[in-house]
Length: 196
Ligand code: FES
Image 1 (cartoon, rainbow, N blue to C red):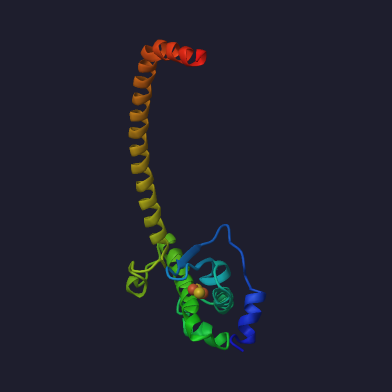
Image 2 (cartoon, protein in one colour):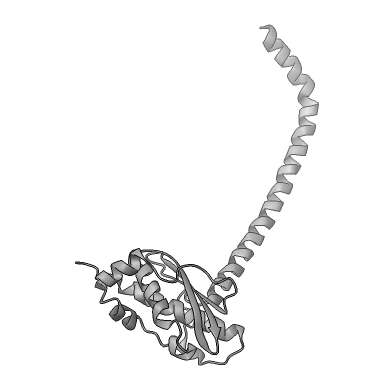
């Protein structure tokens, strides 16, 4: 069989699906090639992962790996949870086909991104070198950067639109006054046409 029974089980009955409204940390990661997106929420109590939930928009393996990742970190101390590797996820699932290994990488990154977000929000110092420096979409900051860019683009396009609207309004005013002037001529000619 291509997929192990465990993969099929976590795909069919994923554990810890959903979101945590008052999460202490949220990590969202995505794979640009396949387009899958994973979002991980963590709730921390006494420095342990008290609760964890995920939402994954992606393939069956992405769902199975996120589900298994939540099971592996639940109840663990935060600094231990953050060490979760994609290999550990794959082993716990009794393997994945080679071309699906990147799904487990996404799960590892989602956990790291959620923990990093928790550290940032709670002013907890950590070794920044251990986290993505900006080459992938695995950190929450990237989302903010994208938001900023999207807002900037929106602002530019609305400025352009305002200019375009002003131009159109000007054109319309000119056309209106022209049509007032040409109105008589037009009605005369249309009368002529109607008579014909
Ligand atoms: S196919 Fe890309 S995460 Fe599963």
